[in-house]
Length: 340
Image 1 (cartoon, rainbow, N blue to C red):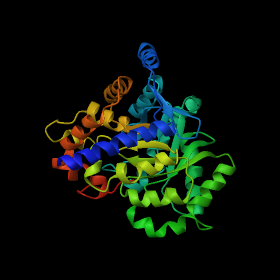
Image 2: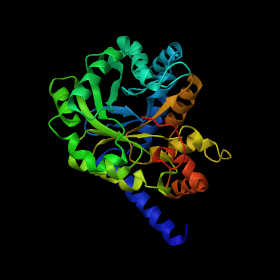
Image 3: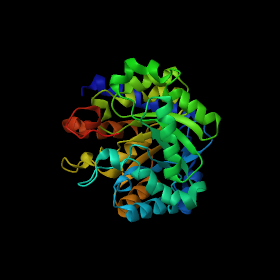
Image 4: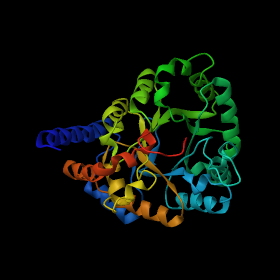
């Protein structure tokens, strides 16, 4: 990157971070408040948009072990431990369920919700619970919501989201808003108290999500954000500023890019990966967990988080440049099995 481009990028990052403070997404924390948090050994919190919920900056994603059939006992242990350690936001989806040697993907769907539901049966009031519909129709989404509530053993969701809006759907958004579309299902569910807030998610194309949130007032957005993002079709450049301007809850995912960010000589650590994203105007980040040790490590990083300056962000971005295509598999730049 030449000097001119570096300076332009530095100014963009500075303005983006400042905009998050103005919008209240990343509130100013005084030295006294920071010291108090460290003394109390608590996870820092940020506003989840206009929902009124103060979300811990690190949250639990419902994939990895939690979505794997046959690992129910370990999944329940992870969910319970996450809540015990202070996490107050859990993300899952009707489609989450990992195929195994004996079970196809379509039959594994719902595994994540069921495993989380085993804990929600007793601890529902302790977390802000989010799930998703991958159906784009009214009837299909309402059927999924009924199944989701049963799986999660609850009578309502705090957040229900349109799952994984893809690039090919950019010219099909009208169908979302049709009489028999998914948005009508969301409004119906919200009016009847089955859902408190609505949102949308995606990791493939920021332009499509931008068009969607400019068209409809969602409360929350879940988007792919990591240190390699700027090198191709950037969510940070294209989508994040719009979500900040709309004062939405903003949840980051794909932080370590399914651990691929560590596969090229170890030049990026989990601390760098998380600190990079948490410096940006996001409400929280979600990460799928395979074992308790990973959960504890990530929570420790979140507790010790201190914002990076623009030069440090630039340095981390440059570390990912030589192998960014491998890290952008979720944008279609490398081979990877289809995922929700």
